[in-house]
Length: 482
Image 1 (tube, rainbow, N blue to C red):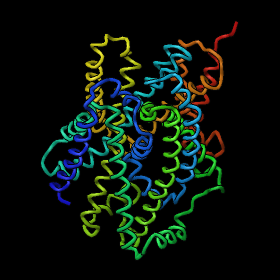
Image 2 (image 1 turned 90 degrees about the vertical axis):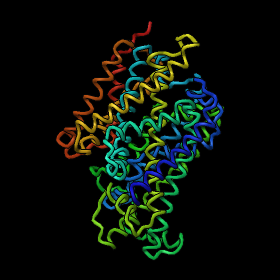
Image 3 (image 1 turned 60 degrees about the vertical axis):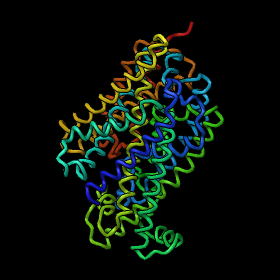
Image 4 (image 1 turned 135 degrees about the vertical axis):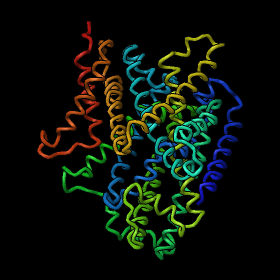
C-alpha cells in the first residue's frame, strides 16, 4: 500500500469514530463522561473490552511469540479466566455497593486519605507510562509508513495521534468509548480472520477442519508445560501470573473497571465480565492459531522476520493483497487506540475525582474543570511520548520501562487485599512509605532471584510478591484495637 492509500484509510477510520462521537456525545455532562449515565448495554461493554484488553503490543506480540513459546501463553489466558471470576464476584459487588466513580475512593473509605491518594497516584503513573508506550509504538509505525514520505516531523505525528483521540472523546468520554471500542474490536477480529483465511489458502488448507487438524498436529501448538519449575512457561507460574495480572491490571485498574461501572446494575456487570472472560479465551486461541500459520508461511517462503516483526512483515507483503494489508493496519490501529482512548478518559476521571476532588468544586465549574483536565492529560501524554523518543533510541529499553510500570500494581493489590480480607485498621499516614518500599524490595528480589533461589527465575509472579510485601507492610503499621 502506498503512503497516500494508508493515510486515506486512517482518515476514513477516524471519520467513523468522530461520527460515533457526534451521536453519543450530544449529552455533554460529567455523568455521561464518567459513567455513561449508568445505561451502557452489558453486551457492548463485554465485546468492546476484548479490544481494550488486547493492545497493539498484544496484537503483534502474541502471534510473533508462537515460534519460540508455542501455545504456552494459553496457560496465562486460563489464569485470566479465573481472575475475571474473582473480579465479577468479589470486586464488582464491592464497587457497586459503594456506588463508586473512581474505584480508589474505596481506599479512602477503608483506610484514609493517604491510602486513597497513594492508590490513585500509583494508577496514574502506571497508566500514563503504559498508554504513552502503546501510542509511541503506533506513532512510530505511522511515521515510518506514512508521515516520513511527506516530510512531517515526529512530534507533529504524535500531536496528531493524541489530538484524534481527544477529538472523539472530549464530549462523550466513557459513553463514546463503549461504542468506539465495539467497532475497534470488530476491526481487530476481522483483521485476524482475514489474515488466517489468506494464510490457510497459501498453505493449501481448505476449510476450518483442515486448519484445525494442521494446528493440532503441529509441535508449535503444545500448550501445557509441567516439566521444569524453573521454566518461565511452567504451568503453575503461568496460571497464577495470569490470574493475578487480571485481578490487579483489570480489577484494580480504573481504566478497565470504569467500563464495567457503566452497566445498569451489578447483575448486568457480572454478565458482562463472565461472558467477556469466556470469549477472550477463544479470541486468544485465534491469535495463537494465526501465529502458527504465520510461522509456517514464513518457513515455506524463506521469510526471516521473527517475533514482533513477523506479523507486520507478512501482512504488508505485496502478494498478500491490498485487502489483507488494509485490514492488518486497521486491526493494529484499532488494537492500539481501543486501549489508548479509554486510558485518556480514565486518567481524566481519576485525576478529576481522586486528585483535584471535582465533587468539591462549585457545580457550575465542574464541567469546565473536567474539560481542562482532559486537555492537560492529552498534553501530558504528548510530552511523555516525545521524552521516550528523545531519551530511549532503543525500543527494547522502553519495553523494560513499560514492564517496570507493572510494579505500581503491587501496592494496589496489597492495599485492596488487606482492605477486603481483614477488618484491621492501619496508620494511614505511613502507607505511602510501604507503597515505595515494596516495589523496590520486589525489584531486588527479581534481580537476584537466580542466585538466591538456586536458579529459579522470577517472572510475572513478581506482582504477587510485590502485593504480599505490601500486605505484610500494612500489618506492621496496623493500629492496635482498644
